Image (tube, rainbow, N blue to C red; front, side, top):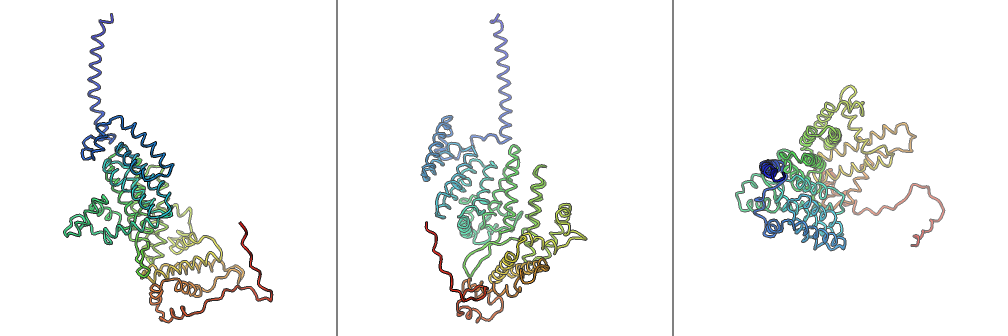
Length: 510
């Protein structure tokens, strides 16, 4: 009986094998379309070691990689960091197609290992290594992997751009120096795309070969989101986030990372708006950041784009960020003496978020859009509901910024800060009008201004102090008199007594 069934089983096996043959071709095609696999010919330019491990070791790569991971963890626990660099190189070459391998190794170097070194130059070396691992090697073998683009953009936005690391100012300074040496200021995109002179050719080669950036893509990013300051990390976060979107927009299987890349772009755009311009302090010979108000419309558009792409559950979060940006933009434009633009943005705010304003700030849109009321409310948010001391401190801070901006030639910004100081002062007078006279009164505004000016001239460098005196139209003798003035003897407002001074109190013993 069994022998009679063998031909049937054999025929059934042949039919099933044929079905597997045709279905496997279909599955392989789907895997390529969904970017779930990579063709072998993509590794044809790999170094000999990587080509050997990929082709010869086969399944043994997993065993070797596991050992290397264990060894690397032991070295990190023993704080033997430099051997880890070689192990990280071997691990990534053993598993070049696993994006999380590149992300983990880069993160470990930039975040975990770097903070073990107290010296900022040493930390910078490890952060650089994390960036180059992703940019120079990870993307080479995974050119369409959104996770690596996101991690690279995050390094610029968070590790270098944020202030959570004690060495963040050093990272920003070193990166600005590198980019200034590369671009000489603002990049000449056309010269980078089609260099003519020997200097332009050298510069273009460095951009492409060392920093792995495409000048044509840079120009496109600047056209969409700029003008941007390419010496700041936020701009490079925008560049790599945008490039990741362009490279991976057809990858339907990675929709979640596509949204994260968009988020990196619009968050970095907001940072670029708040501090995306380098201001040269020629007198103290350093650069400082200030808002890049010219990109307000581009930042707003990035939020609009994100709102269009956001899922229903995320839409309110994006809208909340958009509203906060609009509040900040209106206040910043007002403070920088660009009141006409600020009024236009407030009208835009009222048009798109009328229900929100009616619910949270009804007095702003009562009888039409009340610009002065809106700005004063933002001032209240910034200074809180503090008393005399906090208010006077806020006024002095605005005036100090006014004198500083005036000294370095930023006249529009200076006017905005002085206007804001007056607004805070007047707002406090109105709020404290019913208080007991003499208890919480502020000194006269001009007196506060004079005290702040004296402090600025005493603390500033000689070059900056001379420039401030000139900008204010004061005679040069002001500085001479200030330098020759005898030191001020500290005193209190307490009435004089005949009591002997109190004895010094010894510090507590340890």
